[in-house]
Length: 346
Image (cartoon, rainbow, N blue to C red; front, side):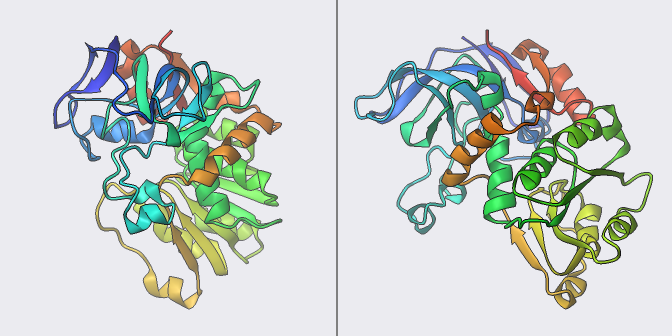
């Protein structure tokens, strides 16, 4: 089978190669036929050598598929089941974090796409404990959005604690930002404002407005803090959901949020250190919640939200191509001329 792989360390070093169909390595693993696989910002970071990975490795961790073979100890799934999977493979299961159910931050975790072979190919093997069944009637293409949606649900709802009638600001209009806006409205937020740069005018701002954002703020055309304060009559947002990873946006979030408000930090910075107004955050008595990946409970909620929302989430999918077009797709996503790209093996 053909696979899109990071073949060596360093910027670039991505190739389409022929590899063998994987065999089930343990009795509690399954073999899955990939039906759709989404491109994540992490894949772009791996492309540019800005994220940990162990080459040679098949890329891709967002996917949907059909089980074609199960190990002898798998009881809850059978061939033919339609599934998505948490990307938390090789978590040890015995450390303090794993025992607390936080396998997403286990030190031994090696996710598909960077730690073990991922989904930018025809078949993938994974532990059955990571699988979730796709709701009846939900397409494979929309189900492939479950992983970023689970991140939004975990970090906006479970940790960010969105409350009814909150005024929400989302910094960053990428996939997670738009899904965060949608999730916030689904949880009863009164108004949602989303920020982004001028490149977002290509498609991202329009889709954000269709899927939940009441206001879009172009940070290259207007002062985002002034805009938020005007929209909230000087009070500030109840919660800022930071998805951009931009140092300037992170610092501004303190000025955007009301006293005793909340900042839910999702975005990962390109730099190890950034400047942050610590004293201002302290004097405003803010709750700052840091997040990483998704929880077990967020996945079925995410699938239910995708299946039951009245919003046209199909608008999120801007590319449906084969892995042969990977470089064009990566460049367009990097230039913010798309939102979610899917590689379709068939």
